[in-house]
Image (cartoon, rainbow, N blue to C red; front, side, top):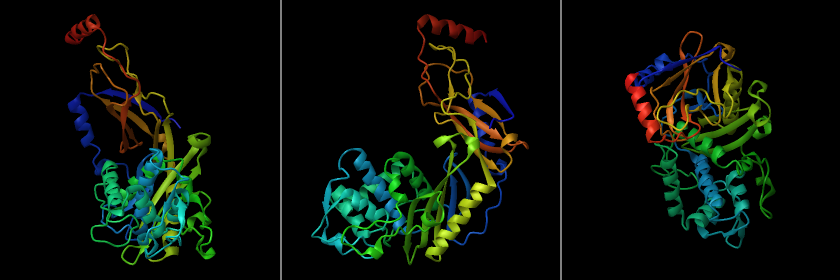
Length: 398
């Protein structure tokens, strides 16, 4: 769906800074009120547009319980991507792994277990034994693996997270937030699409282990066909927690993968296994019905092509490689307006991926819906000496 109008405004660098101040929370468009959610903290993210739709105590420190295993998986997936390990490689089971309390895959020191089976045991069964076996196999020791987890948290910008173990059992300083968990889950899905299918597996058990231990603890996988992940967690201190994600077809966005809208809910500190599923379902359903996701510009299409000075090209293409998608209250999509805020003049060289201005989306009342940073889509190299001199003269006259 296209916005009603698109207005191009050229701003000086100082003007762009002033514009950013207008995006304070008080200036934002008012969102629909979220339903009552029985949880200590929660967050609902529209992954497709990267907009938070609702949140309660999103920055409150909480124990993550087995949601910790999302980061454990991230580090293991990264090792697979770097070919440091393979899915068919086998790891031994240490006494430490074997004796882990809590949820188990039921492996023992007599076994050599494939990495893929350990991943399924950690993800589907939430096995603490499988988790420690993976940590020791990838990191050499649990302690070294935890260092890798904390390093990765910093890289991802998870400023309020500290890990003390790979499985999520209660430990001093082992905390995170709903916001950080949304960052981790989003990056896990984006960075490792080839592995996220494990989170949709409903049943798995390792040969020879108890048949009763084969079901994924994420009840939404059995209740809602649009849900395809991600992870449950529970300790007495953390309560019952769930990071759930769903994708549903939205014809207005396009066909195929482009037409799918993904939401992610982070539910922390509910009272029971059923409650965490029910409250997550309530939040996801509300997000899909109370909001519409609108594609303003397709992937690869420039939002603007302003003139460039002293460059080998006359213009620069500004936009976002994935296109521009925004989420608005239901029925408001046709009323959107856009403005482009950028410095002027633009002088080469300009590098691909360089941030250069902002696409501001406003509603019919003029309230800011969202600001999207604009990037240079194609590099513009500096022109030769004569071209630079000529443009310098033109700029001086201007």
